[in-house]
Amino acid sequence: MPAPKSVTWPMDDHTRAKHVILRKYLDAWFPIMVSSNERLLLIDGFAGPGEYDNGEIGSPLVMIDAFLHHSYAPVRRKEVTFLFIEKDSARLQHLRQMLRQREERENFPPTMRYRFWEGTFADAMDTILSHTETQQVSLVPTFAFIDPFGYSDTPMSLIKRLMLHRGCEVFINFMYEEINRFLTANYKTKEQQYDALFGTDKWRTIITDPPDSKGRALRIHDLYYNQLINYAGARYVRSFCMRNKHNARDYYLFFATKHIKGMEAMKRAMWKVDPTGTYQFSDFTNPYQQLLFDKPDYTLLQTMLSDKFRGRTVSLQEIEEFVIGETPFLTFKENALRPMELAGKIEVQLPGSSIKRRKGTFPEEVNGIRIRFLASLF
Image 1 (cartoon, rainbow, N blue to C red):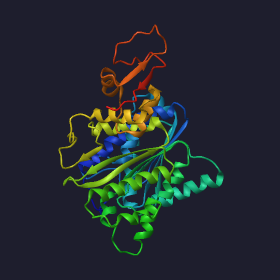
Image 2: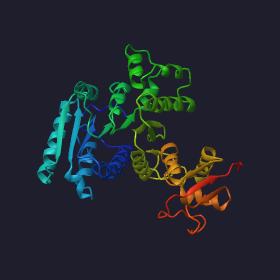
Image 3: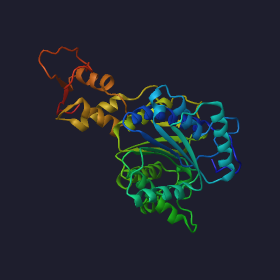
Image 4: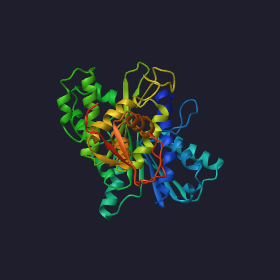
C-alpha cells in the first residue's frame, strides 16, 4: 500500500499476519536472551502511531505486550529498553499518548524503559552507532524491527553496522513491490537510493528482466538475501513473502541473525502463520488460511539431507543445524530420518552396544547418536 497521509490508517490482513510473526518471535526471544544477558534493547525503526483506525494495536504495543504479558516471569527482572523511532510528529505524539494510557492501566516493572526518537531511522541509528563506535563499546543484545513504507531510509551499510554487534538481530520489511516497480524509473536520486538499499550496484543487471517475470522477482529477492549474508555479516537469513489481495508479491520480511537459536525461533514464529513450509501469506485467501499444501513436503527434506550428507556419518546436532539454518524445514526426525531409516537409506549408530531403541526413533535421552547416510543415490 502507498504511504498513508493520515495519523492512523486501516489495518490489512498481511499486517495482522506480520504482527503474529513478530509477537510469536518475541515470545521465544525474551526467555532465550534473559537467560544470559542483564540488559536488552528492542528498536522499532518505523514505529508509527501505535494503533490503526479500528483500534488494533501497532507494532510498538505488540512489542510492549510481548514483554509485559510474557508467561516467563524472569523476563521482567532484567533491564529492557524499547526505542521507538518515528519521523512524523503527529504519529509520534499519538504513540506517546497511547503508551501513557497503557502505563496508567498497567503496572510497568521498574526494569522497563521506553524512549522516543523523532526523526528518520537512518539518522537515529547513525547517531547511536556512531556513539558506540567512537566509545568502542557494543550495543546490548538488540532486536531491531525495521518496517518502512518505502526503501530510501534503510541502507544496507546501516544493517551491516548493526550486525557488527554480536547480539543484534534484524527483522526487515523489504518493500519488494515498490522496489520492483521503480527499478527502471529515471529520477535523480534513484541510483543512489538503490545502491544504498542493496549495498551494491549489482541491481542494475536485473533491469533487463521483464518487470513481472518470476526470474526478476527471484533475482531481486536473492540479491538482498545474499547481501545480508555476504555484506552485512549475517550467518542465517530467512524470508517470508507477503502477498496482497490480488495474490501478487507485496513485500518480503527478512530476518537476519548470527545465532542458530534465533533462526529456529523465527522459523517457528513464521510457521504459525504458514504451517506449510512455503513461507508466505496472502490477502487473496481468507486470513490465516493455509496456502498451496496442507502439510510440508518432507520428501524434499529427505532429498536435501541425502544431497548434503551422502557418504558421511554425522551427529544429530549437525543435521539439526543444517535443517534450521539452511532449509525451509523445522523438524526432521519423525518426517525425514524415520522414513529414510525404514527405507534403508540411512544407518543409525548408537554410542553403546547395550542401548536398545525401536527402529525409526531417536530417543532424546541417548547422547551420541550418529547417522550414516548411504552413498548410493535414491
